[in-house]
Length: 223
View 1 (tube, rainbow, N blue to C red):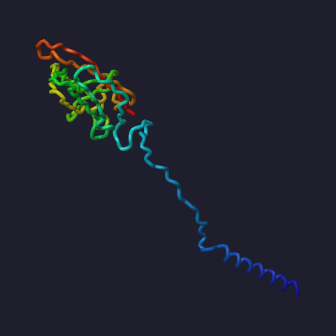
View 2 (view 1 turned 90 degrees about the horizontal axis):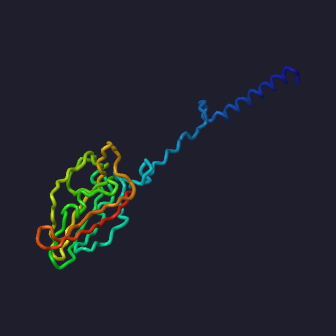
């Protein structure tokens, strides 16, 4: 075979291989780059039930939960007090709430004072961070926060409650943060708090009956 013939055959073979490679390598033939996975994992937004600030606020509520941690033994008077949690968490609709019940355990009529304090109405804790107020009323506090914007005025009158033998009376009290003179705007604090009040029995409306006094209280935790 002449040199010219061999050169022509070699060139044709190279051209054929190039065409085959082009058909096999292009796939779609449009020049697009291979498909890649562009998806990105989304951050986990599962509700853990905790306050983003690091507290233990129950999920879906506006404040901490309330737990009774200790309750005093019944005082040595004919009136037996008890306390229980009625609403255990703060929400935008209501603050935490307690129910205080007093029972006359004697077989005689008993007069007890002061009529509001014995139900822990307008009674603050030992540190003056919290205050219990009669339920069902409106107070100057932001819903969901429940700290008073201003102090609550209380009349100086001395009220007396009368209990027939075996009679029980109950009252609901709401838990608020006490107003602060320094303008502190925090909501309900967390921690343990002690509430205590004084009961006066007998001799409240005159007569020869001897007056007896006793203190009673409980501790609660906000967490």
